[in-house]
Image (cartoon, rainbow, N blue to C red; front, top):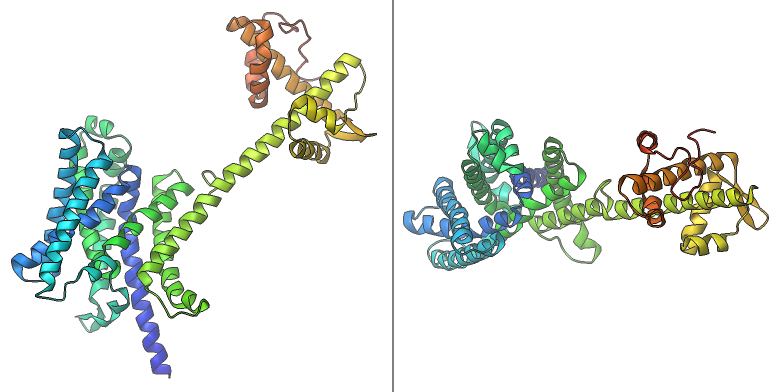
Length: 441
């Protein structure tokens, strides 16, 4: 029983290691594909190298890794060249030219693989979907140690990609963000482009046996795209993409074993679950990313809306106090009607101001506290300084300045208020003749 447990654990470890190496190799290069807005090129290369694989076998009669890799790399570079040529000569966009090239080469590859399959066990299913579960069963000896052959190939490929990115990091970074600047600095952007395409093609071929040509696209793009949502720093993005890729491999294998049983089915393919888990990770990042996440943006907009309505409430109550020369209490209904805000937004803003000690309940309405009055005075100072600036510096009619100043008052800090005050020639009065509150009173 113990021997069986150890055997199963070794198999699972070999599968996860191969999957992680494959995913990280793809993700490492995928960062630059995403930054260059060439995500579809990874898809194109992963499909277009099929005729290179089939042609290499038909010409040499060998399935050796070097032969297959050479055939795939040649066709991969040819794909990049044909895509650029069709784009330039045919006057079509890059997406259309990639679609023409990779679908044609993919179809040709399937035909050639079908032809090759009559002579050897080279079938389209293996190339498309991979056989990750069988990786630990095909081993090679390195010294006295037996390791899976595919794992060794993927480890070498990952090491090559790491060295490539580490040595040419500056060149890859500059050519990804600004090819024109790279040219002026003496960096050949075209050479970097084709070097990257060559390695993407080689990585794709190395990954075929593990996850197949279709699923390798997910590993090329999804970890890098998810990492890009989390950070705008390239170095951090690369590290995060590697973590996401490794997590996709581990969780994908775990899910392939555990999840189907929840629904009464047997296990499913690890490579498929890797792509599914990577997609779920991307979905989670897309929703919850601090800066670019959908939910984060919704929450930020909601909080910003509450803050703006709250400041409008302060400004309205302060203006009423100016007119009446006495504290003014106003109910929620009247506030909502004047500010033209929704009932939920108005109630939330009033609740937020009460918690911060800016409003106090007075009868059936609200009135300013001393702290609220200070905030409102500062807000109104920003508003009237903007009205003065728009009228004096931009020659805007005095009766047209209110709407613009109402927007700008919410984003005006102390330094900008000082600048606006220095440009005002009317002194303490705005264009309507109203007094501009002092900075501190």
